[in-house]
Image (cartoon, rainbow, N blue to C red; front, side, top):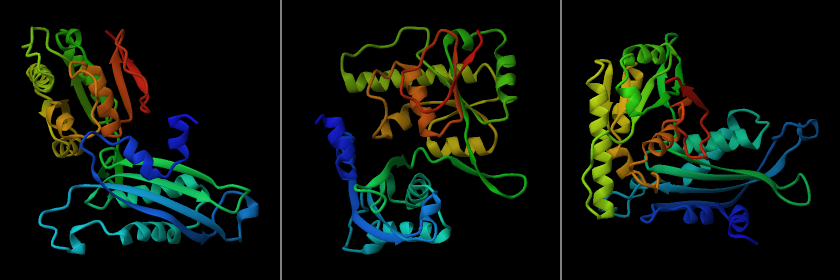
Length: 306
């Protein structure tokens, strides 16, 4: 059995461990939590309770020091079982996928939770367990904003990669007008500047220098249009999206602070932009003609004309 298949059928804790960065987070887990509930989309499942098993792993922020043996300073196991109970009590659910999504979202509302693995299985629908497993991160939770009707809605921005040809294009302002006309918050990403960049031969130092070089290019873009606001942190980005500002991303802080940032060269601005699309739960990513993004993104892609 291959490693991938073995991990697919292993407990979510094994998947969490296998996908952990070099400096992994602390984890808490709930194993084999079984609840009887009415669930299912088929008529045969209506009016009947069946056993559903939950296995959940939550990666958490480091505990504040000193911990002082104080339960209020940790993410309690009770918060995980409460998330399950509250979602089951809220309404009858047809799909395990819906239930897993809602449980993950509720857990990620906890301030300590950073990433959650949720496996939900029906135990009484056949000779084996039938289930789904999802992984969700705090970073990928969309921004919430209040609309004109006073309702809270999710905000999914448009992420756009501009190469140096487009940054220097004489019709840049008109291109930005067209992006704003889409009606979504716009996050502009750039790559390396056109000039030379210092070479150090030291991998960690070079990564920082390359990210700073991209940030210089971000400021160069911002200087060309007063609508462009350079932002570095997720907090700044969320606020700017709520204000409808046109964002230019300075990547150093988010990339260096994240445990799941791209492993490749920091000079690959397109790979960084693709990673950002997942990080902010983008609606779409737009790339110039002739520029290709690495495979694997769940976010739809489109093209910018030259």
